[in-house]
Image 1 (tube, rainbow, N blue to C red):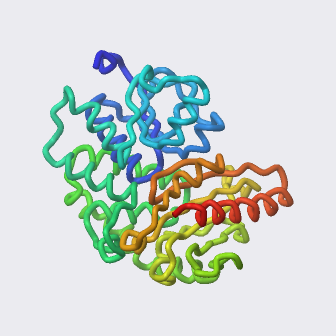
Image 2: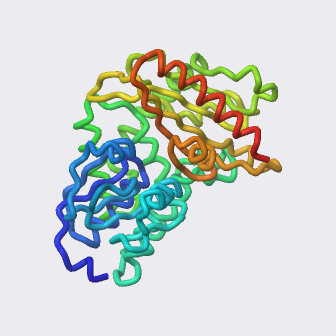
Length: 331
């Protein structure tokens, strides 16, 4: 733990609930108040400035950093490909349900956390790995799930969204989730989510289709590439509309500074119904096999870079079919 004696300048973390909780833990231990939010593709494309004085959470390993915490198997494989031994890097990699769990276990060796941190990290475990026992459990309004849903709504600007997430980092650092979930701004955003959920369901119905080869309607595909600006939806709401499906695949274009690009993002998750069926599915392995990205057994994502609209349309069809082919090959 000698690394803790140095001074760190900022925390660079994933822009989701797990990334926020991970940053909260690091902020508590390392006394760092500057937090930057980003996604995996920005790290892979070196679009974020990171130095040896920075802490990186829940993201691929950058060219350098002061501490790195992660739990995605694909990021581990990327290091192996680069002949980098993760055990020699500052921080920790471990195949845990959440990055927050990796951070908690790492610092827990020498730091006394507030008593409520264990419950906070347990919520991150469930939310990030989508490890619910049923649709009913997923819909239950626990404090962690209330906060997570406030991240699913649209914001007037990226600056406002980042300001909200940054405030969450410090609130979760200093208070139990039960108290954070009652904050006026959190309740206001949660009420907005409830209002927007109907609109999300309508977009899902308009965008949904099944492949002709998917005769049993196991994978519903939500193709959002026709939209100039990606709609903010929760793709897992598709399970309420199509309760018989076993998985949902969302496809949308990436945006660069608010401008739609030809690059594609894929997000795949398992239905909670699959827990009661005799299937051995691993959507993270599907993303890794196609060299698209990474994830967990129940939820995964990836990116395909395209130089033109024609290439984008071609790759979209090839990748969707490739994902379903690997899906069928799994037991």
